[in-house]
Amino acid sequence: DQQVKQNSPSLSVQEGRISILNCDYTNSMFDYFLWYKKYPAEGPTFLISISSIKDKNEDGRFTVFLNKSAKHLSLHIVPSQPGDSAVYFCAARTNYGGSQGNLIFGKGTKLSVKP
Amino acid sequence: ETGVTQTPRHLVMGMTNKKSLKCEQHLGHNAMYWYKQSAKKPLELMFVYNFKEQTENNSVPSRFSPECPNSSHLFLHLHTLQPEDSALYLCASSQGAGGYSGELFFGEGSRLTVL
Image (cartoon, rainbow over all chains, first blue to last red; front, top):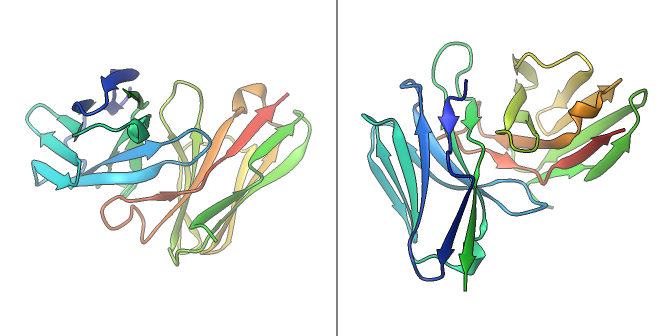
């Protein structure tokens, strides 16, 4: 059973508008949540993270929101740019048992930003 | 040199072949990882090494054999693979197991095709 879920495989947004990528998780023991971006033929690159004790973290055009009661996080990109077109992975870090520090990834959401 | 380098980038092998994937990190990190990315699946953690010691083996079949001679190098030895093992194999590193806040640095991946 997937502990980190990205239910939208793809998202298309017009340049300049807001992109909202969503992620749900099932395990309340995760201590950090992260977003990675992946271009074709490249490895994932870290984008932004949030501690489980926070509800918002902002870095330039990227903001991550965490709703612990709903076990939901989202990544907002404002304004969206064509260069943001990539696959975005949500990940959660375990902090329990023998798997401390391991990341569990969602399947990814492919974002297309149209000019 | 880029942070995490993987070779080869592409590999085609028969089911009876023996080959190896290589990963090298130039970031001074002490933890290294192998992840597998199959089509339409989340990134799956395979192995974790922290200070050259294997700390995680995520129920990976023995036809995959990792080796970590030092904190900068990680190998994945492959033998008698199956066609379903065809995937993108990603190496990553971090400062400490799980990184400071979960941040991993990924290589560009080795695309493996098993015929």
